[in-house]
Image (cartoon, rainbow, N blue to C red; front, side, top):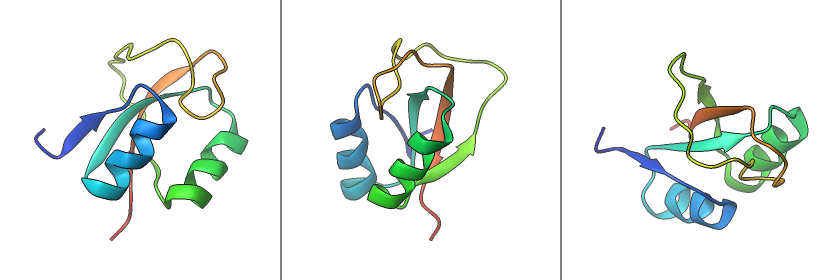
Length: 77
């Protein structure tokens, strides 16, 4: 749990991935284009969509559209 952070927006997400690492919980709209953009810009990929969802925000961290799921994101090392 100490290696897992929460991001409410894309700038915070990128900062956490770059500076802190570990896993980041963030909302996602479910669009593959957003997942690919996140991967291209941060090298982080989706790792898990938990059955028990948390509502961090109402919008996708990447595009701002309504969020479908909370996802754990992380980099492969």
